[in-house]
Image (cartoon, rainbow, N blue to C red; front, side):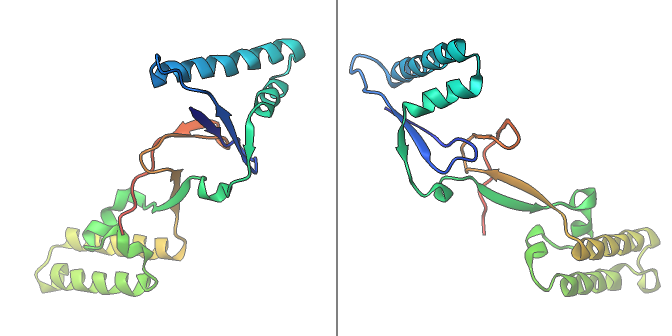
Length: 177
């Protein structure tokens, strides 16, 4: 059984190896390995009274691998963050994938003109729908000038511990092209 650990801000991977017992389940073997590592950590913590020294001690017992760490780091996904949760896109009949396009401003203008022809009060539309469309146009043009994104990092279908934020992160959504 192998437990690979990639500590925060470390250039390599630390691998702990434990021989499987044919009479035990993998969960029992993992529990035994965890108990051995945990007991080692606690003994060093009691001896030195320092948690970082206990962690160093446990990591010093691991096999060190100098693998390409970049391949193991979580992917970072940028998700456009719009005011109003994307209602502006709905009013102009655009999709979130359009926000990644280089000709975004032209796309917003043409979508606005298309909707304005349908909903302008002079052409039989109502004043309230036209105001919503115009507000959506202004919001999207302002966003195009200074876009904001939510950054999500993670592995598809895998939880991971983010050492920078000191918390567990949910699996990242699969990015569909």
